Image 1 (spheres, one colour):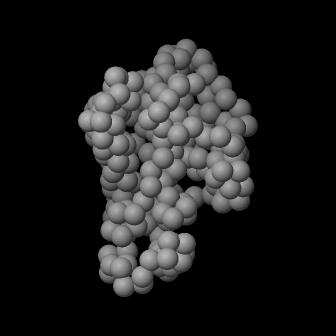
Image 2 (spheres, rainbow, N blue to C red):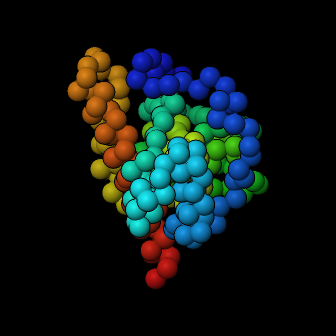
Image 3 (cartoon, one colour):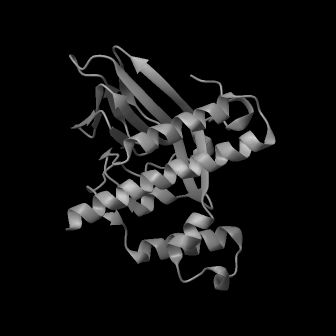
Length: 220
């Protein structure tokens, strides 16, 4: 596991993120959930933070994203001939993108395949297995473990995201990830820390863009 030193906060224990099982079942690509759930999260966040209700703008999603906190716990680029990780259970989300080769994941007894140019997005508190099937050959993973929250509340719970997703602009996504890696592993400086943080949100923006595009395509 890569040592993230000063620029990311390592996960110390599952209790730090809570032990509630939020469930792992997600309907395929159905976009953003109903406004009632968004309103509930906003109300809870306002209660947690003690904010004035008038400070919450009409555009609920703009307010949520503006106040969101993104935490990256671990990340890496790995090239493997073989790989199997069984029965894992994490208090954070797993994003694993396949640059070359292919991999599969099993969640709740369902097999998900991720060829090159696709990623698997595994919800937190979801028991799963992740592996390279026989015959797939060398596989390159670009992965990170993350949470994105508002006032300690899980923002990803408001998004009906697919477990697997094809990245339409794969070359751009890969370049963003490698650029992020360079800022994280180079000599620390104030500019590099700011650039790293910007790249984190840029990658998440591209991920959300693909999720929404997937939803729009299914709606047509």
